[in-house]
Length: 85
Image 1 (spheres, rainbow, N blue to C red):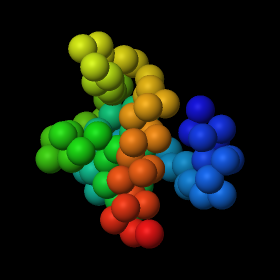
Image 2 (cartoon, helix red, strand yellow):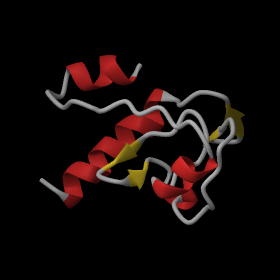
Image 3 (spheres, rainbow, N blue to C red):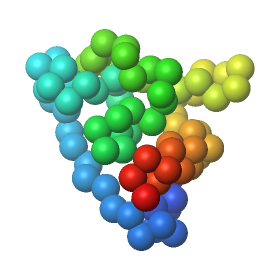
């Protein structure tokens, strides 16, 4: 989904494998899957959460999802563009 969304923007990404708790802490990884844009998590309300070497869920409306909903990603990309046009 990330590749598909970015294909239409001309942006690229770097995929990183986090192998342990120390690496998770170093990059403020919040669980798999985590997407950061310019070092910021795509869920603003979770940016102060502690790092975690675990599985992750995402809040979308009143539901918790095991995968990132496309709306969350698109909103985060728009936010990043507004901050760094």
